[in-house]
Amino acid sequence: MNILVINAGSSSLKYQLLNPETGELPAKGLCERIGIDGKFTYKPQVEGKQVLDAIDVAMPTHSEAIAAVLDILVDPVDGVIKSVDEIDAVGHRVLHGGMEFSDSCIIDDEVIKAIEKCIPLGPLHNPANLMGIRACQAVMPKTPQVAVFDTAFHMTMPPKAYRYAIPKEYYENDDIRRYGFHGTSHKYVAKRTAELVGKKNFKMVNCHLGNGSSLSAIKDGKCMDTSMGLSPLAGVPMGTRSGDIDACVVQFICNKYNMSVDDCLTMLNKKSGMLALSGVSSDFRDLGDGADKGNEDCKLALEKFAYEVAKYVGAYAAALNGIDVLTFTAGVGENDGLVRGMVCDYLGFMGVKLDPELNKSRGKEMVISTPDSKVQVWVVPTNEELMIAQDTAELVNAAKAK
Ligand code: AMP
Image (tube, rainbow, N blue to C red; front, side, top):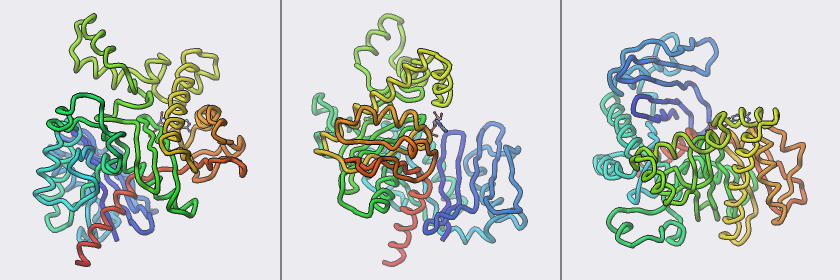
């Protein structure tokens, strides 16, 4: 089976052609500067096929971008499939499913309307995701399309986790509540961890630590709480996002500097976090290098990050009445033994014991705790595209079987 996974942004479109059963990845790539001067990248994973790196291709809209993707995938020399009919379905990443979607679903007119209804909650991403969906529908009208939402995995949270303590009307009239993000990654890691530990019923905290970071409390494969909120700004501090912050900070800054709320939010999303604390970079590799050279601000950024991540793990361990497994994933979680070690140093009180040798590993799926650790600690590399392909295949196969 071949699933085309699409992640459409406002002027970009990432694609992967995947086999959901084996995880085999014949090709992937990226369309950039759509609507500007169109740059096309194609990375076949099959030997002997030519790589295209940011070549000029006219892509006035997402439709031409999808057409260019299909053209190269079926190219007689450099393609990896013979015809577009070999693509069984398309899986689309959609940022915000609001209260409308608690699972992935096959796209029809009703689903498109519901994704449109969620635009106020995901004003930057949902319109772009819709452009990707519409472009695929236009170019491949017979191929089933599936929407996979970044928020859906978190819809099992109980009200005590998702409600904000503000007047009820904002929840009832405007759907203001905690939604959470990185849901496809948390879902993949929860599913994979269940396979790795060989059981279904257990309690875990997953730390998705990358440029954007979020933690989820997961019981028996279901999300019970998560650190991001109505938007991805909430939770632990991130590459350029502040994370949780007293709302009065916004009021103070807007009043004192005559700044609009929107501009203040841009500052909190794009100029804060590790970048602001270190004054050097949002990239954790740079922070590690800076700290090694004695840069106190880089050290503080790393300390603050590990401290806030550990606080969330502790809070979620309390929320779940103890945990069996702690997992690390995404760019920092998979690769940065220093950060993992700093986080776990806080967690000795709950019986977490890291094996320092195992914790040196990078990017490998493996246990990194000692055999006598009360909580098993794992590195589980995430694979959001594979999760999207698997959800898509499952829905399309179920529809066929009906
Ligand atoms: P992501 O958003 O998941 O792509 O993660 C990006 C973050 O992962 C960046 O801050 C990178 O610095 C960090 N990262 C990637 N590789 C490494 C590594 N080998 N060591 C430390 N951090 C890394």
